[in-house]
Image (tube, rainbow, N blue to C red):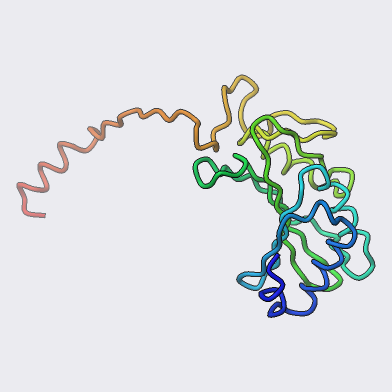
Length: 182
């Protein structure tokens, strides 16, 4: 990581990354501070342990999982196809942290339901919409789409179909209004 750029970050963000790098030296891939929010990219295998650390550390106390989002990076770069983004919040300090994991097709991400039970439905949504599996999830099944649905509709490689819509219900009214000068 660029130590020079990090020196310009607020002290708390620098300390958070330092603690993560000390506790998980092989797992912290990168960190950035943009738009007032710290983003840390971590290795897939360590995400559950890192989340537990962030929740339990008495100084950090990221006790609230705000959201989990899936990202399809198809053709964006040469990196893995998908990402999972965790938005964390500390009720004690009022700080936010974005934790990102990049994964390839078919790779599983460790579930964080054991860390934050509220991760249950967001992980199911990411699975349903992107096809990203969560290892150790207690009930990983579709949540938004019917069980019979084929594929995962938010993937960029999902086949799109078009059904032409004929707006014929008001054709007569439009032509009449045109004749009357409206």
